[in-house]
Image (cartoon, rainbow, N blue to C red; front, side, top):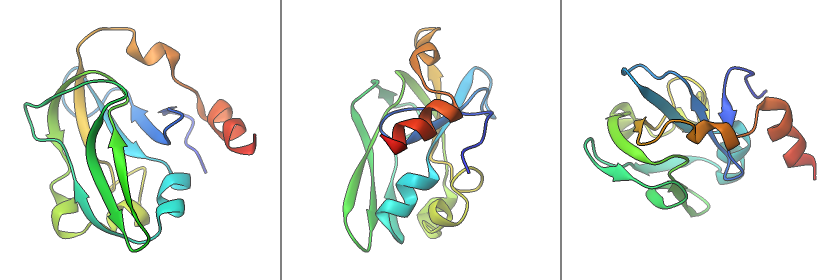
Length: 128
């Protein structure tokens, strides 16, 4: 359920390294997060060129149940955002590790991924 090729945060985000853009990591939310949110009806993402800071809010996911902040898992510059989510936000529910990705960031400092969890550690964190 949690792909082994991704890194995970305690805020239920995943990172794929590398992303599609040179030097970038791709960011999304986990199956656990999208399931907890319910049917996502609106997505607000950071703009291309925006600088995000690890741990700070950079967007929102609105579902039929609630509104949830999206936190930047790393610091850097946003180089891509999933424009498809503007018209079809339900992609986050339907394909959280593929078509439902959120944005890509070029890291401001190397080594930011070192403190993240692998799939086994993330899954274990959900049990505890």
